[in-house]
Image (cartoon, rainbow, N blue to C red; front, side, top):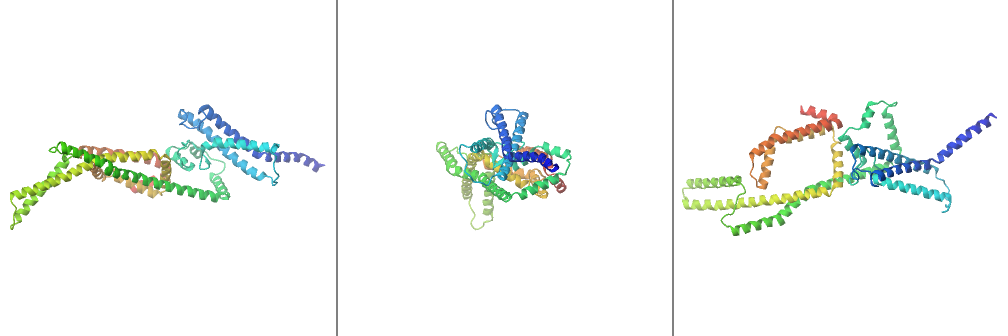
Length: 438
C-alpha cells in the first residue's frame, strides 16, 4: 500500500513535468514572439514604424539610451529563446514520417509556428549583421558593415563600461574564471565550432583584402587624378591662356611668380657671368671680348628666364591639379563609408594587437618626428617644399609662428590621447612608453 500510494503521488508530478518538458519549444517560441512584439510596439509608437535608430527620430541621449537598453534586452531574449526552441525541437522531434493533413490541427499549429517565426525574422532582420543579432550598448548605423566584436572594442576605447565597473566593484559567490572556463568548454564542445573558426577566418581575410584595396585606392586615385588632370585638362588650359597673353602683350610676359624666384634667377645669372669672366681671365690663348661675353650672358639669361617660366607655369598647374586631387579623395571617402568602417576595424585589430613594446616604439617614433627636438627643421623643409610646389613665396615669419605653435598643439593632443584612452586600454603600454622615454 505504501508503494502504491507513493506511485500515486509521484506519477502526477512526473507526468506534469513531462508535459512541461514537451511544451518547451512552444513556450520558448511564445516568449521570443512576445519580445518581437515589444520591439515592434516601440518602433510603431516612437520611431514611426522604422528601425530603432537615432537617425530615424530626434530624441535626447538619455531617451535613446532608454530605448537602446530595452531593445538590447528584447534581442537577447529572442536570441536565447530561439536557441532553446531549436534545441528542444530537435530533441523532441518524432521519428515517424507520417504525412500531415493540411486541414488537421497539427497542420494549423505548424502554420502558426511558421507565422510567428516569420514575424520574428522580420523584426530581427533590421538588427542582424553577419548572421548575428546585434545587441550592444550603442546602436550601429545600418550602412556600417562591422562586426559585434569591433563595436564592443570601439565602445571600450571611447568610454568606460558601466557593467565592467559593477563587476570590478562587486564580488560574486564564485570566481568569474570558473564561468569563463565553462563558457570556453561550451564553445569547444559546440559541434559548429570548426565552422565558426573557418567563418571568422574568412571574415578576417575578406576584411584584410577590402582594407588593403581601399588603402591603395586612397593613394592611387589622387595621384592619377593629379597627373591626368595636369597633363590633359589643366595643362592645356594654362598653356593656352599664357599663349593668348603673350600674343596680346608680348612685352609684358611674367617669368616669375614671386620675388624669391627672381632672386634665385639673378643669383644664377650673376654666378654664370662671374664664371665666364674668370675663365676669360685665365684663358691666355683665345680670350673673349666684352661683346662676346655680353652675348653669352644674354643667351644664359634667356635660358634661365624660359626655365623659370616653365617652373611658374608648372606651379599654377599644380594648384588646380591638387584641387582636383583633393576633390577625388573626398569623393572617394564619401562613397566608401562601408570600406571606411572595415578599414577602421582592420586598423584597430592591428594597432591594439601589437605588443606593449611595439606600441611604445611607434608612439615615441611619431612624437619625436613631429613634436620632438629636431622636428622644427622637418616642418620648415615641408612648408618650404609646399610653397615651392604652389609657386608661393616662403613666408619665414609664418613658418616660424607655425613651428612655434603647431608642434606644441600636436604634443598636447598626443599626451591627452595617451592619458585619456591608451592609459585605460593598455596601462602596461603606457608604462613601457614612459620607461623607454626616460
